[in-house]
Length: 226
Image (cartoon, rainbow, N blue to C red; front, side, top):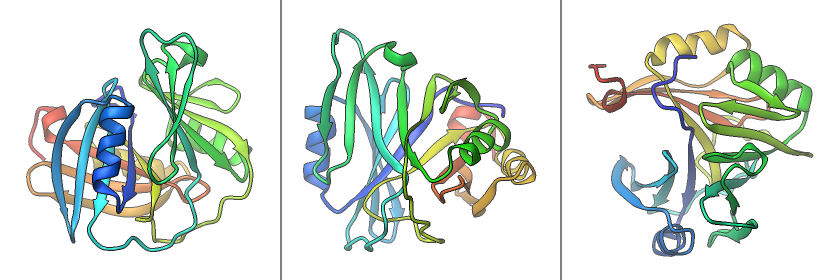
């Protein structure tokens, strides 16, 4: 996979805009980048975390009640820490600030609960072409996907915009080629290729438990037109 950015992004959905913004900016200390409108009463508030983006998607209307995704936590590397600091956002999403470099976390680590670790190992190493850097640990750029525990994760079908952590984003130079390549290597589609103005081309694939991964080709990163 040819990356346009060496950092994964993480997206969550919430109805608690003000509380979430206060938490991520003041408690966690993430710099605010900008807000983008997604349509349908949805705003994306983007925050920088070591080159990755925390996408706090605020929904004006009540979010549907969906089973939780398999993303159960987020670790963010922080200079100057000697021990981890465990936190939870206003919706209960777990985030831990960790000393930079602890357990290989240089930027962020996304923690997963999975039904079948072997299926995930095949998916992350073969379909997604992430580098295995330890048992249940997969590196994409300077970000990690980590199998933190094995347990029941309910498939949520085609619905995914529910409360909590819901997806990761990988930035690439050619969305179509990478999306088709992932499907050819055994991944499943979570949403066909779409274009948003002259800004971004994107598609979604799903891991073995139905968690969505956005495959994004953003003009501002690739330096070209879509």
